[in-house]
Image 1 (tube, one colour):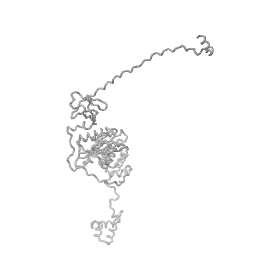
Image 2: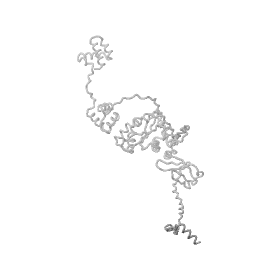
Image 3: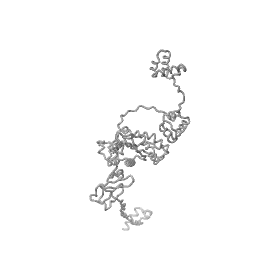
Image 4: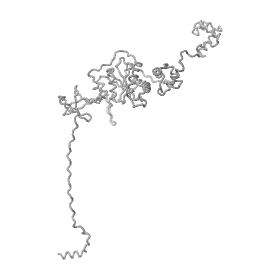
Length: 431
């Protein structure tokens, strides 16, 4: 018996002893006078148990059978479902195993079976939320998540995501590296599907902003990012007429950060259940299941139903814009040097003023090279490698045979020498 039931019992006893009237008891208990009379009769028959509900202690007729609970616990105890929360577990039980259980009932079952432990929420720092944009396509948040998506079953993957700020509509792809080329490929897919947004919201990574080189000894003057040359993605956004807005903190682009948190929980477990172990399988599941679930469940309706995306026109050739672009100078022989290879402009394509001018060289995502002078592409050809100049062989001076050594001194010092007096006498006699 709880405290409320004890208070009702005290009031009924007062009414029974006629300390208060039945009308006063009804007002105190917030019931009708007729109900007070029923309670007084029950009090006379059953005693103090009259204030306790008659269904207390009885099993609910809507209670699920014990076999359902045992089946759910047995399925969720498998290693493939390790770490699943009640909400995600309830979805998989219903979709894959035909066991329909509410997430709250399943939460109690999992906590009793020690498959889930409730966590107390810590007080979080409150940030005033930035209001959403009013139209789809006004602002698209763009970022990459470096996470162990396959849990060691395959190569390391990165998830590049673009999420609309107004509707939370998500577009994402798994890639093998967070490079400029891979980001351009993901942007290409988004543009073909939805069109050109008005602006993109990213962090200040080197893919989007050129880092200023500063000497350690001479710091120099800080330059405005507008004055720095754009990156390849920055140039592509300019040619597509898409504004780039940098975020000064992760909280500023919280919509895509929270999206990554959801994906790192649900998507990782879903890829585990699906058995994805490579890039192709991960992208297939991402496109066919996760993105479809996200865009049907987590998106919201914008305040304005008009779409701010702009269509791609003829001048927006994605193969040209989304490529690595550099400038090269045309030599006097109408050739262009690019990465160690010399290309020759055919004679019919030569124009006035071409010699010494700049040429746009595009290293495209498919591996091909395209060169454009002004508004025309040139069918250049690779020049043959120049033949090395034959160097004259050095003249080797022949040495003459050595002259034979004179032999008149041989044995000279072997003969015994004459005494000095005899030698002088012989010399004087001969003279």
